[in-house]
Image (cartoon, rainbow, N blue to C red; front, side, top):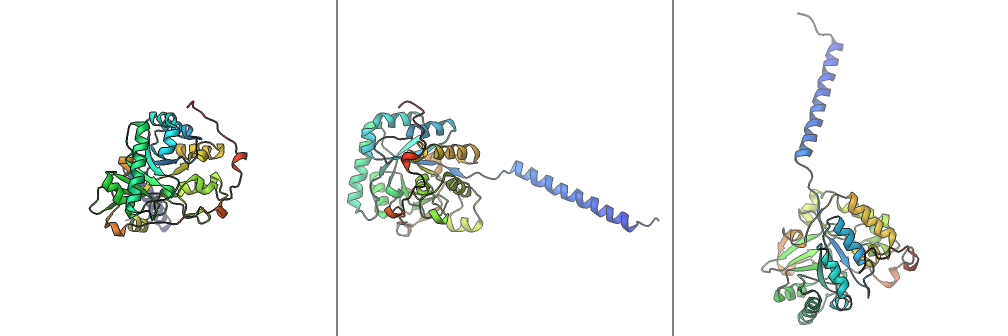
Length: 317
């Protein structure tokens, strides 16, 4: 019987090693093909806080081209003054209105005060659109326990809340309530921390579109096991734009277009986003974030608004 020389034996081990390595790579490739990584579910949030719709139609139409769904936060006063623009926005079919108290947060308002204002918001918007909004909000996306109580009594299914779970958006269900709470995505990047994941949060604090794009990309990274344990397992994101920034300032609008075209997000409707609850907890345990970094001394845009290159309306209103 012939002896196998050591150098031949070494070659055999190398060949076998290469075969095993290739087999593992092939198996991993097949696994990814058959079991692709789940995309985060996302929904855009648009905010109108100016007297006129500056950039609104631009963003809504650009989102429609890409089959992106979104919420539009408006006051009844804005809707009354810009009813036709609102109807045009809704005609695209990818936007749902949020009745919002844009002038002030709901934090600390009594239950009766909130019920009165929420009723006023719902009825005021319905006069223009013919449809009563299904979700309510206020400045900073804020809500408190009285907001949830008011929404439940008025039959409103959804409420927004200032974020409490980092970049991840989270759905809360107070025990014994039908109303659900959407805690929106926040910024984790230290110079812009505590703001919502919103272009204005960057713009007003000397941020550039590239800064926001990095944070948007970070928000899409798979959740770690620790994040799932802390914040809930569903990967949801709610990128946000003040449309007078995202839809009207050219560099910021281009950032949004690039993000939408290059990112892997499963853009869903409001009902789809809210369909699976992360946490069902007693009302008194609902996390409330009242951090407000938007003070006058912190507003320092890198380029004054008047000097930024504008988009102009892409579509006739």
